[in-house]
Image (cartoon, rainbow, N blue to C red; front, side, top):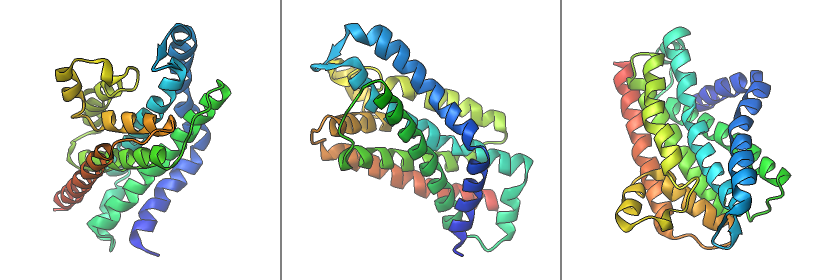
Length: 244
């Protein structure tokens, strides 16, 4: 068995054991957003000729791909600081690339599960959009980017509490500023330029365009792919440093 498959299967066994709790946890936030912003507030708002709930669902999908892919860092922290599983990987014939690839794929799997939940809830709310290749390409690239970032940061933090602090300072602000809840096109040019520095802004814009049956600009996918590659290389380097 390839070593990266062993790393990936370990995370999947943990996910399977906690599947019901994970599904419930992944459902709460999007359900609350759909109820409050979609039904309560969104019934009076239209964005680009569509209901606010239609606008919201692709953004929630992009946000969920970020948060759930990044959440793999928590599992790595537990394995590293409390269960000392990382020390076992150090002793085993598992390369840095295999370890990173296995954890990144685990983060991608968690993200895709969360997306299915978001889209299922959207269907229950009567939202029917186009979830074709452009939508999923944006989601997958965004998930790979943040899963790679999660591995990189999990290798440099000194405690589980430090990881939570990083989540509060990096992921939470991006979730609200990355075009999830409002159209970036409505902002002044300087503000839109600043927010397009965030990978989630490109993921939200591309996923939303794809879900609306439009052709997203290639620049969004190029940015997401470049960010994913940079974070993946960074993850490999930090794993190597943690092994030293």
